[in-house]
Length: 333
Image (cartoon, rainbow, N blue to C red):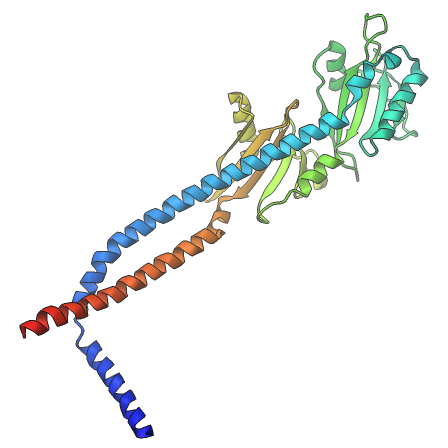
């Protein structure tokens, strides 16, 4: 029985050897080439189109993230900054200095961690009262501060961001206090508002890759906060040139959000997006290197399909040669 099985195995290998020896490899190569050339051309086109679609999807995704982040930051600022409404209340307008301090103290206590300091400043720019902050620091002179000057002139409230040591970024805003007799402004309220919640939002933002980075910049391009914590290590640092150019172009176009490719140097290309925070001149941004797209699962899936297609072409080329041999050459002989 064992001898019979051995002889059968030898016969199978002998038949395979004869089959391989009798193949017309030129014919197989010609048939394979006829199918491989158009197949590979279509595959290359597929990869190109697929990458463009992935790039477009990634840009749309980044822009959506920027818009959502900007929207949430706007809501945080609207909810936290209640000073303008307080200043217009009759009890505040007609109240004395101590009454005003009491009202502002209640506001600060109702939003713990939001107001670092609220200063009441006279028309000459001298601080006359303070809620919160460091009690040991002498009263300040705001007369040369741009935020104060703008508020005195009656312009829109424009903020300035400052970074204090070992403390989250602070937004400084100045708001005119209405006069009881509707005459000249009765001083200015200068608010130091913590942006800890904004910084935490950006830091904890869920991102799909380690290379992806997000942040928030002011009208001058200075980093207010970013996901990598650069604003803490280097306070006052400007954002990358690719972010500054995008924000500037969107502002000039009157657009509120956008995304595009941004080449850096000769080889690096980044995908960047930005969205304006409503009611401010701030921009929330997202960016990631374009090379990240190559790691998407759909590309590896496409490679497996193409490899399988090449294998099938080779197998069918072999079968075509055998069929041609049996149906044409063998019948003629």
